[in-house]
Image 1 (cartoon, helix red, strand yellow):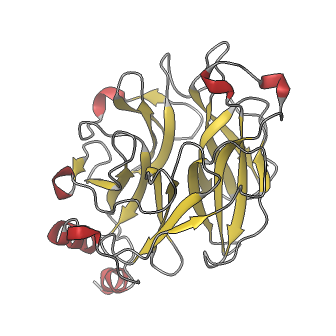
Image 2 (tube, rainbow, N blue to C red):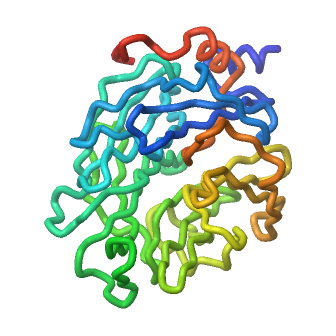
Length: 314
């Protein structure tokens, strides 16, 4: 009981956590959606499927690819794609997933004249380094001609990153991952001291459109060649990873089929497609799985989406 009380007092997930999923619908124009699951398989929309936060930053004012983690301060930190063509990302924080800070536009690629976009940002907190890393995909016109295609508006992404301690000041933007192919939609876990990066191979000619894994002993560099695809004979994007019981589950968007998919593994090496075992709310697009406590879930259920998109400073 003492351990449980401490977990609740610190707003940390309990021994048997609730799985929360942040996602978008449509083009991301209406904002942040949330769903939850007790078993990592059946996901139920919160707030009757209504958005919990409307986007206010960026010219297009979108909230695509929302990534939420809980930081060392106990707060939830979120980054997202604000636009198809702008050179920055969105950021906000919350103590409870209901009351959000004022949204901030972080101009991570504004310094790069030939940058065309800033897509699918993820935020990762490294406890050992006591630092947050934000990484995303960008096409810089003229770079990496060996993988250039004229298909799909000639996008040719690589992944870039910044680090921060406080989401106020940031390191210079640097190259994060150059796998030798058009790469987007990265997500990261750390297991047994090893950093494991899941990415989408965005190659169009011939089409790949699958999820692959690269590994490193260092947070910001040293990721090797991506392994064989862990997804099947379909187009997949937007991977997010959770440890559910003894299995790792990678959820992703089967965007051509307009439904979610998943693969599972006990060793992060051998993968089984379990897409027929999962259920997500209709219209779900990809996002991020994270763990919350039962008190967190109860508060979100009780509060629901705020009217008139009120903001408060956490």
